[in-house]
Image (cartoon, rainbow, N blue to C red):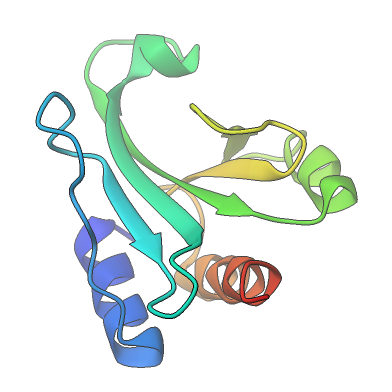
Length: 117
């Protein structure tokens, strides 16, 4: 999965358009609720070194909010990292290219529900 597919999914399901809030970080796209303005996702393209990964180049990730127990569990599985630039107890980074789309959709849905109130 990639950024375009995530944007298409959230547009279709939640009528969310990504917001690019920072000129300094043009690849950082915030996904938030229309009514309460709370974030439920943050899509970023980062240098692998920023994520503590080996190799050169960049990687697309998406931070989502989850139950802390789920965050702790998933951080030890392939395709996931501690959240970048967010609370690492409640947020998790998904490596978009490494996790299947069904699982990403489920995690987006969970994050959306957790931030709905």
